[in-house]
Length: 609
Image (tube, rainbow, N blue to C red; front, side):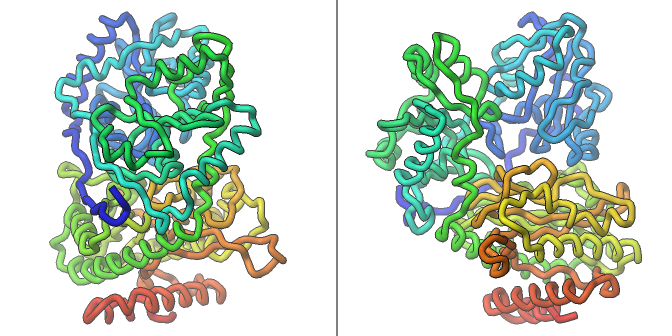
């Protein structure tokens, strides 16, 4: 298949029929499987063996057992009690989705494991884990936490034993990007990665994260919801032909032809044998201990004197530095998305005061406007459509059980994005629907000022997202309030909407570089009342000031910010100028692509203040 013949295929999010009522019987069944396997507890992570942003339906084990549908979490099912650990984004969502009579929901740091995990295993007990679903870094952390209290035991996945109607693995089509979209050839990218391998004396590199492999080999696929990747593993030798390991069903003559001269294709079932062969030859093999499964690391190191070089995935930084072709695609994607957002916001303005809308109808309408663009492939994540008090649930996911009507006068928060063939978008807008309280207007303006502070900042090269995060929070902090999530995350180019290694929060120590794209999304959440978030995507560019030593941001997102929620008295002159200039640009770029009432609405929505 070629870039020009691959058609976009929009699909809906999967539904594994999660329901709190299923939790108790599934936990009972899992405990029987644990007894048969001789373990006292079993770990159920959100991840699959590839550690990508999304998992296919067949790998959604955490949702199957706990009914929790968030994008991160870890459950431990003990013989007598069980827990679900989630980070601050999901402390409201998780208790609402699971059965809290069966599973205790506890907060853990994002990306970390709570020390309380030991409370759910009897002293001296055995904790079973699937070595394909945990990394060496995780195991090192868990081993420390369980030391002297319990032992970790690798077992076959026990959830798979009880999941009698488990869906089949994905087998989506594969696309090979043309140079007009990739901007760099795969051999050129491989040369850069091999140079990094050479610095550490590595004979080979193992990659498991789909986004890294797909970027490196200029592939894309449709194997998981929202992220256009083909699932596979890669073995890259220092010299010679790399090998890509796919499920047997995906290996077709077209795939072999597309990779001809670039990489060998092999059945994923043969990968462990290939890795053991590397180990037997005492090779130095580079792995990322934070993403490679324990099963792979053990296959390499468990047979001889092979050396594991544990380094961060060397593809992450080159992938994050978008080239001119990728940036051009991302700008085009945001123009397309700007058109859809203008139509949606115009529609919401007309319909919300009538009192007949609910969260599902609003999310469906937004997706329908995006579907008018033929190059739409998928949404980039499940739309967060939070009316009134549901807007305070940071990563709220609406379903038939939680679907809430939007009452005129409530705030409406919609966080959404799209995957176009040209690029990836992510945008949040909080909308006026009839009236606004003084408190809401104050909080909205504080959030907006924080978003603008990040948008306007000029910073020296070497600056990290951890260093500028406070700029977004300063106006809320001054009032003694905060928000419990990062201010921004990296974004891929027609890849994952969440991409490392940069972002804006204390957990991002990697410096910004030209061509990196981050979200900028401060917020405020009043539990049981309302939520506010405003999000644009930003591209890092060289600043005209500072003799080439400074960077700044280019805003990519093109959609109006609701001026009816802004307290103009709070704004400084530079803030007012930035907002007016941004809205002028939105109308200049999106207005000519609209007609009639929608265009007239956008002109008013982007008026100067």
